[in-house]
Image (tube, rainbow, N blue to C red; front, side, top):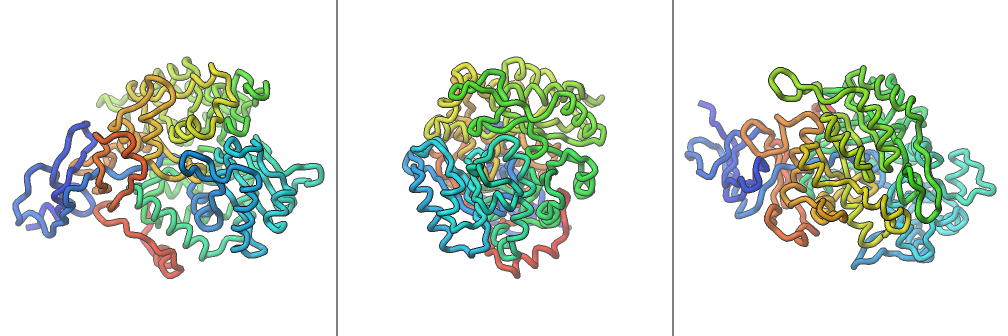
Amino acid sequence: MSKLIDTLFSGAFFHTMLAEGEVYNYLGVKDGLITYISDTRPHKRAYNREVRLDGLHVYPSLTDAHLHLMYSIAIAAMGFHICEISSGAVVPDSIEGVGKRLSAYCKGRGDNDIIIANSYITQGIREKRMPTRQELDEWTGSRRAIVYTVDGHSSAMSTAMLNALDIESEGHDGRLTGTEHDFRQGRITEIMTESIGLRDIARGIASFVNQCASFGITRVCAFDGNGDSKNDTLMDLLAFIAPRLDIDVFLYPQYMDLERARPFWKKMRRPRIGGCGQWQMDGAVGSHSAAFYSPYADTGKTAACYYTQNFVNDSVQSADAEGCQIASHAIGDAAIDRILEAYDLLGSGKQCQCGKRCHADIPQRIEHFEFPSDEAVNKVIANGNIALAVQPGFAWIDSRYLKTYENYLPPDTIKQQLPLKRLYDAGIALCASSDSPVQNIDPFLQMLGMMEFSIQGQSLSNYEALYCYTMNPARITGNEDYFGTLETGKEASFFTCQTDLINCSHDAFSGVKALHTYIRGKDLRRKKGTLGEFAGMLFRRTKKI
């Protein structure tokens, strides 16, 4: 007779996430699924082998609900983070310091390499500005170089990079923002493709998967593709790699052109589209390109939405008619209203006769949702078929170190920051995420941002913050029956750590790492990034993305 359990995990605290205090001591796995969870040890004849976890705490594995996978891999392989927060301060904190760090990095790169520097924190630099193209030319030896701001929506480019993008450099200081920046990312991707090699890709994939494993992440929602790129070779490469990765990927092609997205839908269980790229309603606060009704406090100017209401309505209707789950970046209140009106025209969440939302009614998504009006929040709650992917870790960092909102936005606008607790209590599928490579993939920073949110009365509990990385992402992807909690019949995907994340202090979330991460019962082992390892990955059986 076949045994109920292949592997019994014992001696741990298994937090099911079905309820805040529900904890068991034994978990059994067979064929990648949970087949047993109890306080009582099963009879020895019921299992084949045992893994003792020696008092560790175990949680359902995490899902990063919004990141840019190919850019994250590319940054891991070809770039670096130019600014960091260390001991409560931004380092480096001056243009001179940035130049020294960039020059030192370039010494280890070839003359024809593209230089990619991420996470430039403008507000943390004494001069409160991005570097000019002339400065980048000097620091990088006139290489093709690009420096991205920490929000990912502005950049500084060297003369060689401007020329590569067919931007007239004469009279241009090299600093791009708004649509001039956001709608050129496809061309930048094409230039990166010319430089990236198989060794780079192998290293980047290994680095990314290892980061996921170290934080208990086994699945990501990947927003990739750029409509301004003629070929978008990296997107084609991603669509080939993603189904073969150790972790699971839910791909969202960022194309307005549905015909261009259609080939990727064949690899999915359900068509998806959107995110950032061409589906952005606006830019970001730090780049003064987020669309608000009220002017920015420091400039007295407003930024326009990237598209007209009629265009957004038509685009949403067309994608919905194809059965797509749609995602759209919207940060300012004007931009949020633009996508909300289009979603409202689709109607509210439908209920089937069983009283539950059908699998076909996976919610439409708004990404970031940083500064909604009170009316917009009411609409989201009333609609019943809208999910939100947010990055509260950025607000946590900003309120302590960057002061972007404080310096750029009027006080009344700052008070409009998304009401986390209100939305969570209303049952909205509220998901936390990193927006990697804009932020570090660390999920515990985002949870800390939820637990210590800057708007009074809107913070979440430890359990609620963890729920936004476990069960709510299962809802947002239509997979409530497959993952998100530890219960029989669901995936045996979980991670172990020494910390009781439900009952610990907020400070304990800083620096949390997973000791082991399991995906469908198998240990997600550290990768080396060799070409042989990469070649072996290419021959794996594919999964739906």
